[in-house]
Structure formats: structure tokens, C-alpha cells
Amino acid sequence: MFIAAARYLFLCDEDFTILENQAFVFEDKILELGELDNLRKKYPKAKIIKTPKNSVILPAFINPHTHLEFSANSTTLHFGEFLIWLKSIINSRSMLNTQAKEELILQSIKKMQKSGIGTIGEISSFGSDLDPCLKASQKGVRIVFFNEILGTNENQVEDKKQEFLKRFENSLKFKNDFFIPAISIHSPYSTHPSLAHFALDLAKKQNLLVSTHFLESKAENIWLRESKGGFKKWLENFTLHPKPFYTPKDFAKLFKGVRTLFTHCVYLKEYE
Image 1: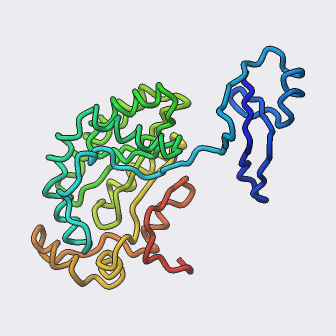
Image 2: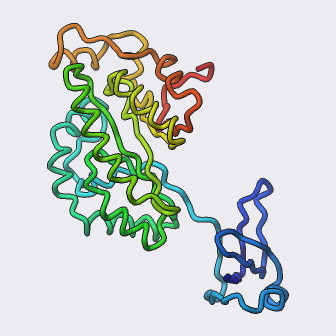
Image 3: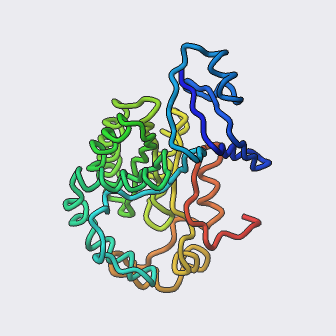
């Protein structure tokens, strides 16, 4: 049991309450707020956490969507137009993953901690970020570890399932309060329906949190709604007569009954 006091406590409740010269007692959860002297008398065995003069205490932030396997990127990826950026991801993802050594990933996590982030939602494409994420979780960072699944080639669906399962089951070995295995469906343009259903069935059975990229760009929006545009031209490099796997509504319906973080949603219409 611990007691901490500060000049200001930001409660982040509905009223945005700010308490001045107050303290709180906590174990796994906050038990009580009040004057420091009163709490010390009521909880004499609690350890006092000393804080500097004029300290401010507030809840930690959550960064629900990180790609730590790309920690080595600085100028490699081409930002701006979505398809140009996507091509640079595909061309460079393996190289960046190789360069993102454990030490670099831990440095990236440390930077986030210093900015007030206490929980990270890590999208793991390869599983190479597992060890540094485990180490960070052992030092008090809560990691929601989203094992990502994607693939569009029907002939490779079974191989993709097995590769995903290997990473997913490995992460489950380390599940605890600070390391929480989860699932990521990459996006509607990159994930075959068989893979999406497979992963979502797993999420439902094990009550897992899911994350997905959705309607991130104009190119994706036109492709899913109208089956044309730059996405179609690009996909023709890989397959004859490409067609979207889903409409926006169909893709969203897949996640019914599943706790899901929809990332981006720039072109999602309110009625959807």
C-alpha cells in the first residue's frame, strides 16, 4: 500500500476536477483521496512516495497504436500520398524490422514513458518486438500486444494462419496484468475474409481485444466503395481483375460483438 501527495491532482473525471494539496492511497487501485495527514493516520503502514515541490499527478496516457518494429525508420518511408507510402512500407518493412534491434525498441518505449504514456498498444507484424515489449512490461509499462494477421492470396491462407498462430500462441505464454496478448486484423484491403474470420473467431472465443486499420486514406475509400482508383491500378500488379473483399459496412459488421479499436476511420461516414 502506498500514499502519494502533490500540489495538484488531476482526476480526469467528467467534471475535470483538480484537487490542490491533496493525496491518495492506493494498492492496485486508488482506495481513497484526502488530506495527507489524515491518510497517514488512517493507513499507518502505507509507504509514502515522496514527490518534488509543486508536483502534478495525473493518470498516465495510453498510446493505443504503435509500430515498434519500425523504430529504425527516420527517412526510409515516404510520407505523403498514401499509395506511395504503402509501397515504401512493403519495400522496406523487412529491412526496418531487421534494423529495429531490442535496444532501439526499448529506447522508443522509454521516450513514450517520458511523455507520460503508461500503456502501449503495439501492432506486432513479425513478433520481433516480443522480447523488448516483455522487458518493458516487467518494468511497469502495460503492453497490449496485438498479433497482426494479413494476406490477400487465397493460395497462402493456410500458411498465413499457421504463421500467425505460432506468433500468437507464443505471446500467450507471457500473459499477465502488464502484458496482454491481443489480435490485429490489418485492414480491409489487405486481409482475406478467411483470415479475418479465423482471427476474429479466436478473439471471440478468448475474449481478446482487436485492432484494425480502417478507411485510412482517400485511395482506400474509393477502392472499397467504388472498386476503382489508384488502389485498383496498384493491385493489378499482383492479380488480374482485383476486387475489394468488403464494402465498408461489410467489414465493420465482421467485428460485431468483438471489442475493437478502429484506427484512423478518416473516411467513415456517421451512418455507418
